[in-house]
Image (tube, rainbow, N blue to C red; front, side, top):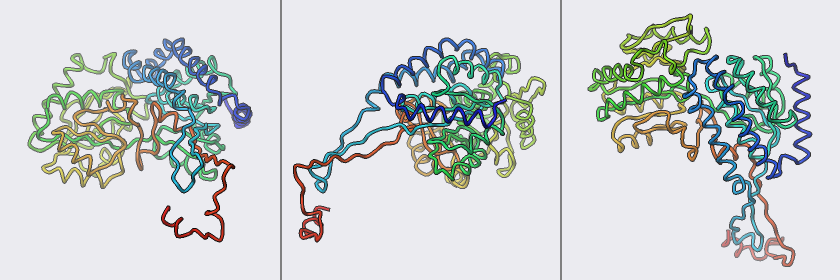
Length: 456
């Protein structure tokens, strides 16, 4: 079991290695990214097997939602790192002439990356691409709730990197307490808002910059003009992905009252279409991560009328994708992030009702709207969220050219592609002034002040 002395030793070694300047060299960063990619290919079969064992996640889904995304981040960094890391000259105003102005992108330093259990490979290794690209060191902390995956990740990291550069530590809350109390140059945390508040409080004494990727209740609106069959199929897919254990899963539904019955029928048909033999024994349906998660999520079945699904098997930690009607907006299923395959549904007659409801609650990580484009843009303009999709769910995370991150209670900061690099980077302002001329107007007693005032 790892203890405080071990963690302190790792941190001190990484501080010394960072201080040596080795991680700052562009050649070193690229070499480490190549090593990272080669190591991931070597350990890919073991990671896929571990994801199946811990989460019942199929190899196809595991590749698409975890490992494949990491490959994409690595390849993108290797392609563009030279441009991202380059010193940039920017225009200088007349007031500082003849000086030249620059932005220098430098690594923040020694960093901590903490990941959750729901996408344990992607959410640990994707931020690591940013840390390596920026020239930082990193201590990685995976979730104890997926022990096989965490053990495999540790072997992978130890096989690829020296501890003084990249290290992985395992443990429960006691290890988190040690890590949260340690001084870092950046903490990148993915998980619950509750734990993020504990982390933020612990790091406040150091004024540590943080990237917090959290969650929340992401609304999904189906308006009367929506293509109901397509909306139902995409929504069911998004809720069934990882069995709803996704931070950007559509959490609750608002369906226009005029199409409620048609949507319920379409929801049932879409579920049967995706899983014609049911979900219980399907290789393509993830089970709940642990007994406590099963108990918590299954309790929500009591908070409404079951319109589709509703069956469970505790021994298998299986909950059938379920649509709930007649839900109370103040019930637990509507006030807690569900993080499971249960879908509470409410109806509306006016989009104003939806806007009032959404903005009265914490800012969500995602916002989904099915209907006309012009109405969608109006809804987006009147609400706020980390990200959004029009006539789709989840898929905005698949485009690394747009930022992924939360706002308010759903997080702070963002990443993917260049933004992952920037998350671990300090943009340093540099002004270079020549000595061949020394203009007198800036010196006391400011004889040319009227002219200076006009210039300003």
